[in-house]
Length: 391
Image (cartoon, rainbow, N blue to C red; front, side):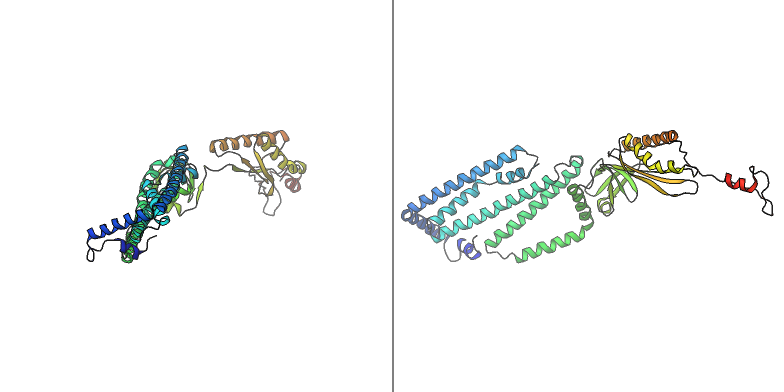
């Protein structure tokens, strides 16, 4: 790249040399160069021609890569679009630089060509960089069709920000090559950016939260989510807020920053749902039958075509021997899960009836006694001992 001191030598010094004299010197050096280095110039032109042909071929290859999939679904299409943006003027500047280097061009001509090549290289790299960054963003968001409105608005803003950033950096580099002191400009841009950021930090916070939702995809439009105990369906993702529809029908509007600060459960992306049944049988159940209850529950789940996890005795209840059944329904559709729970419950009820197992329910036995503690009517045959046996 041309050094600042060299760039300063290229620029005309109106105070020391007449512009016309400078051009005449430039022309005389060029004529002398052509006369004395014609062979080297021809060799340089040949090499430059071959390199330009290779670059044209690469550009066509990049264009074909992009045209195969214009939606940027693959990284090949992203890179292909960037390569296709290689400009012809950059190739010409590269060819001139090659000729100047291989043919020992005069100092003034070599410096002029080097300066022009540096500018062309800076601008071309800026074009490539912008294309790759925007291609990366579009590649990350290519499947998010449901939030196309928010994505379209975000992409417009992203293009502006990326273009501004790339152009600003390229301009600073060009000015630096022109021997311009850019320290103050960089400091001014930094201070201005900080001031703008502080003034609009709330807006930028929600904006970046929206971009995070669009890029990371924790949820999308149509998903059912749970946050802070609230169940709702996502209806719209905006640049500042997200609109949800709660299960009770209300529309909930929450800022993107506030929403992402919470723990979010995406219920739509469940590949299975676990159902837990608590079952209780009476204490009068035969011990062998009580032992078989977990196996019976497993058989019921398997017969219904679901995934059995575990079942077993969990404790002695106030009025029952308590068991627990856990099984998975391999579906994300809550309607399917709801119907599966119903079917398994009915099947358990039917199977228990066939096995002679009785479901427990809260019961209470009352005894009547005299002030001295003696049992009085009514009580079962056999007195106090009979009442104890009946209880």
